Amino acid sequence: MSRPVAAETGFETHEVFNQAPPLEDYNLFTSDRVLQESVAREGAGDEAAQLTAFGAKIGKAEVLDLGRQANTYLPVLKGFDRFGHRQDRVEFHPSYHALMEISVAQGIHASPWEHLARGEAAPAGRNAARQAALYMMCQVEPGHICPITMTNASVPALLFQPSLAEEWLPKIVSRAYDPAFGPMQAKTGVTLGMGMTEKQGGTDVRANTTRAEPAGKASAGPGSEYLITGHKWFFSAPMCDAFLVLAQAPGGLSCFLMPRFLPDGTLNAIQIQRLKEKVGNRSNASSEVEFKRAHGWLIGEEGRGVRNIIEMATYTRLDCAVSSAGMMRQSLAQALHHCAHRRVFQKHLIDQPLMQNVIADMALEVEANTALAFRVTRAFDMADESEEEARYRRIMTPVAKYWNCKRAPGFAYEAMECLGGNGYVEEGVAGRLYREMPVNAIWEGSGNVMCLDVLRALAREPEALEVVLGEFDSAKGMNGHYDAALAKLKEGFSDIGTLEPRARRVVEDMAKIAAASILLKTAPGEEVSETYCASRFGGESGDLYGALPLGAPLREIVERAMPVL
Image (cartoon, rainbow, N blue to C red; front, side, top):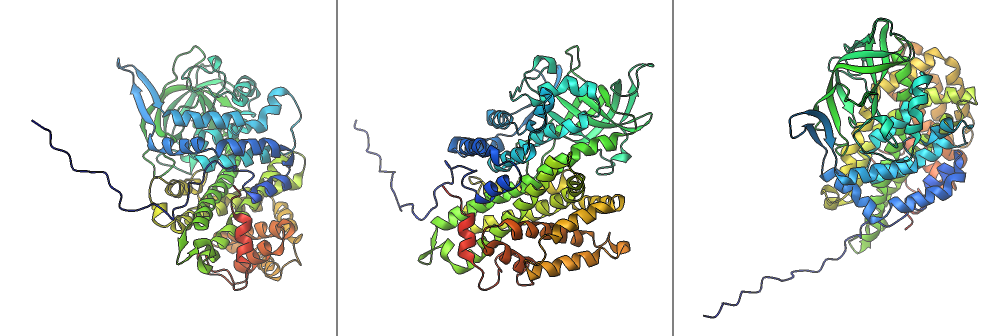
C-alpha cells in the first residue's frame, strides 16, 4: 500500500529586511571617543594599548552572548548535598564563571592594589585604568560586577588590620579566578563580599542587632577572633571567599572579616536562607543569611565599624557612578546603531530631525556623566598626594553617585523606545540594561543618603566646598549660561538652614556644573559644551530628551557619539 504524499509545509511569506544587524564584533574602547578622551585626560593614557586589547576581546559576539546566557540561566541555591549535609552553595551557569574569569584576568577586581602586594609605589592612573575596563565590562554584563566591585573595595577597609591584609592581599590581587568552594589557603585567587544591612535597619546600620563576642576570654581586640550570631537581609555574592560584616561587639558596632571556610578547612556557620528574587541584577546571587556563632576576625578597634566599612562604600560608590555611565553608553550605542540602519518614511531614523534631536540629547548626557565619573576617579588616584584632591573626592563622590545613578533608568527607557518593539524583547540587551539600572541608585546608599552625605561632608569640612567651587570657577567666562548657573549655586549655599530640604536640587546642580566645567575646558569643538550648557542651564530644553534648542549642531553631536565599528 503506497504512502500518501505529505502536503508541503515549508513556505516563505516574506523577506526579512530593514532590520539592523546585531551590534557585535566591535571594539568597546576604540569605538568610544568619549571614553578614550576621558582615559587620556584623567591620567591613564599609558594604558590605552591594553584597554584597546580588552575592548576588542569583550566586544566579540561570543563574549557578548555570555551576558545573555548568564541572565537566562540564573543562580540556584543548593542548600544541601544529596546525602542531606548542609552545604550552603550557589550554583552558577558556566557563562557567569566565564565572565568572572575575564574580569579578574583584566584586574577589574583589584588592580589598583597590586603594588601593595609587591611593595612598590602606586602607579599613576591606576584607578582610571581600572574604571575604564569596568565601564566597558558592565556593558557586556553588569550583574557579575557585584563581587568584582566588592573585592576591589574591600582592600582599603582590610588595610585597617595589617595582619589580615598581609594574609589575604596576595590572594585578592591574584588575576587567577578560582571558583572552587574551599579554604582560601588552597585557592589561587579569592573574591570578597560584604554584609551590612538587616531587616529592621537597612541604611541605618547602627540599628543592627547581630552580635559578636570574643571567641575566648583573653581573645579580644584588633585582629582577634569573635563568634557572630545574627542575620543579614542583603548578603550579596554569597559564594565569595570572605565578607566584611558589621556586628555589635562589646565596644560597639564593629567590622569583621568572615571567611566561608575556617583555617582548619571546615565550613563557617554562614547559613543561606534564600536567594533574593530581584527586579534586575539577576545573574548575581544576592541572599539572606543567618550566622550561628560564625567565626569572624575584628578589623581595627571595636566600635569603629562604620568608619572601617565606609572606606569600602566609598570605592563601591565610585563604581556605581562609573558603571551607570557605562551602561548608559551601551544603551546609547544600541540606539545609535539601530537608528543608523533602520529606515522609516524613506529615511534612516538617524536622519529624521526629531529622532536626531532625541539621540543627540542622549549623547550629551552620556558624555557629561562619563566626564564627571572619570574626573572623580582622578581624585581617587591623587588623593594620597593632594589634600585638594582628597577634599574633592569627599564631596564629589556622592554627587556623582547620586546623579549618574538617578539619570540611568530613565535614560535606558528612552534608548529602549528608540529601538521600538525590538527593544522590548528579551533577545536584545536593552531590557536587561533597563532592569539593571535602578540597583546602582539603591545599592551603597540611596539618593537621599548621597545628598545627606554631601551635606555632612560640607559641615565637617567647609574647606572642601571651597576646593570644589574653585574648580567650577576655572571655567567661568566660557559660557554665559554656565556662569549664571554657578552664581545661583553659590547663592544657594548662603542659606545653610534650608539646605537639607533643598539638597536634591543642590546636588543635581553640582553634578551638572561639574560636568559642564569639564566639557567647557576639554570637549573638542563648541558643539558639545555649548549645547550642553544651553540645554541644561539656559531653559532651552524640556523635561524629556529630544528638546535641544533650534540651531543645535545635532548631526555633529550624533557623529561624535556613534560607535565606530
